[in-house]
Image 1 (spheres, rainbow, N blue to C red):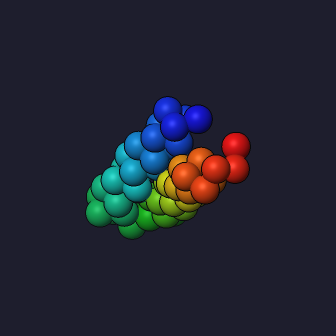
Image 2: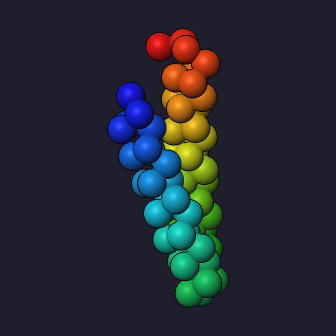
Length: 59
């Protein structure tokens, strides 16, 4: 469970960085960059949720 949560956090962070790079590259890539950022935020939220749930003792 912790491995999955950590993996979600890492992948989410990578997606955030890639999305930011795409937005910086040019106007036509803004939509793709924003989509990657949203996916990254969702994955980070899912990973954080799993870690918090585990920390609270609810498996």
